[in-house]
Image 1 (cartoon, rainbow, N blue to C red):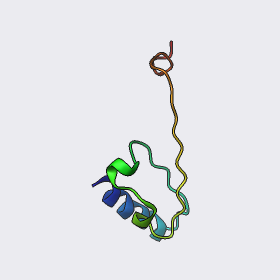
Image 2 (image 1 turned 180 degrees about the vertical axis):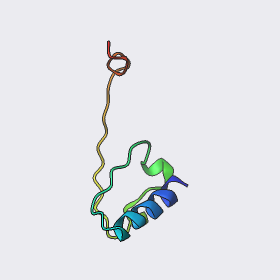
Image 3 (image 1 turned 90 degrees about the vertical axis):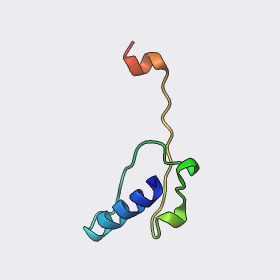
Length: 58
């Protein structure tokens, strides 16, 4: 479902003239996202990792 929603969102942004979209969360293969789901898009995946202490600001 996430992949379908992201594809629709990206299409709407493209129609509105946007050339970039940043999405956060679990968007890996577990949710069905693939380059084929976003035709004409270039995907760049970046994984940010922090320790629990860093998340709490300790």
